[in-house]
Each structure stands twice: as C-alpha cells, then as structure tokens.
Length: 85
Image (cartoon, rainbow, N blue to C red; front, side, top):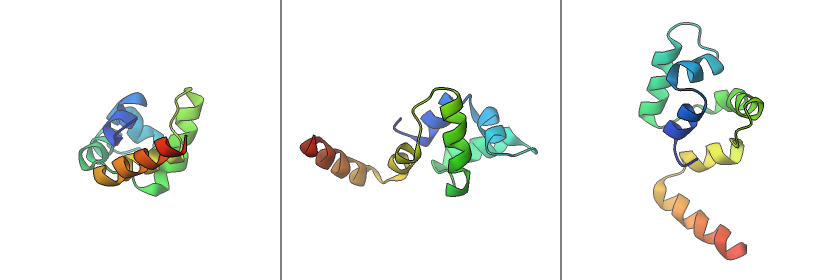
C-alpha cells in the first residue's frame, strides 16, 4: 500500500472505512475526509490494523507509518531498506 486512499479502498471504501473507525453518523463522509486529506489519525490505527487482519490484508502499523511519510522521506527509507537487504 502506498497511500491512505489505497488503504481505504482495500477496506471497502469510505463508508466501510468510516464504520471500521467507529463513526455512526456519516461514516462515508468521515472516510472521504480522511481519504481527501491523505491522513488517518493515529487513534484509529488499532481499529484499522484489526479490521485488515480479519480480512487477510497486509496493513499493519508499519504500513500506516509508511503512507503518512512525506514522499521524499519514503524514497530515502526505501533506499536504506534495500541496501540493508
């Protein structure tokens, strides 16, 4: 996964994602807001990781950190990880 939008899509789209995060009022709007911002508040990460695990998706805290890094920092970390492998 390379973006918040991909994570939201993998978990069923904005409405399903909003429900996973616990929003009972307008879950689709809340999921859409996070997708548009490209950011998921950390408080929701445990719910997202649990939902992903239940669906057999490879979304964990490392993935969530990765998608929230600025692009230049992502590239820098990827280079370091490849060199270490």
